[in-house]
Length: 121
Image (cartoon, rainbow, N blue to C red):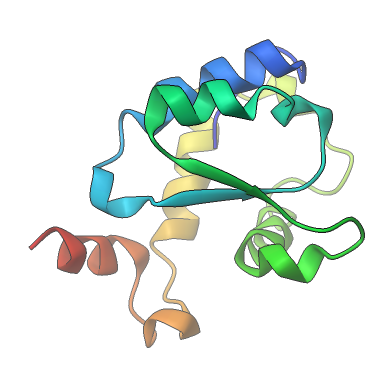
């Protein structure tokens, strides 16, 4: 999770580029997004990160299944409609860490950090 100051294209793309460079290359191959206006400049993101951006079809949230599931998990910490501007990046990082440390059925009940360590070996 990345705290951004606005939802405009420039702000979102800049934040995504900055944080994508912090991840090991083995952990990302593509980004699937909805049709929101914040990804209007997705080509700049792809050029800066070498991460291909795909868009799901309108009204087809299941095409981003793991993202929709994560949104549901985030609602345990931040109910829908919560203004996140009052939360620090450290608080958002703590929530992300807790979610990433949760065992997932899709990972044979391993945690994401354990799975990430396996990828990096």
